[in-house]
Length: 223
Image 1: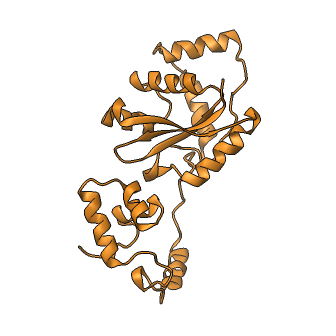
Image 2: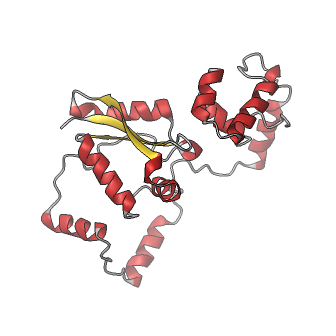
Image 3: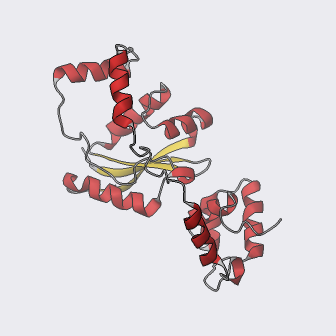
């Protein structure tokens, strides 16, 4: 066994899923088996696999860990470094956790988990059970980690006022790009060049390229 932090990368758009394991060969085989049968717990990765096909994905070791107890710490470091979330990747959680690694479930629980992976349906929940779940969730925030509550009108007005007079685009002295570079980036993306390759050419992070593509930044630049 070899503890590693790994990435499953989509070569079509360079998005990735970052994880860690104490046995890389078994973990990659588990991922592929679940993805091939449409049963992977990560819906974003599963959707991309279904769309682009297995040949588009590769498994890469990011770091070999000497001490298995450091897996969660090092995985969190790579998550912060690569930021594989939202439009830039398939991870849902922004920090790693040990979860159930190293824990042996009771035989009864293991049998239920096995049936779930085989597609055997669970017993339907009673109406009373469903109602209790509904009541328990009332008033709680959305479970998605990146969900942001709407801003009040007062907050929006303050944010708008704080942006008045700011230099945007190439007028910003800290900008690494200019309007012509942004137009070139958009053209190269349309031509099929990867964001990773363009980012390397301009000396910026690949997220900067995708944010330009999605009109999050430099949206004032016209073609």
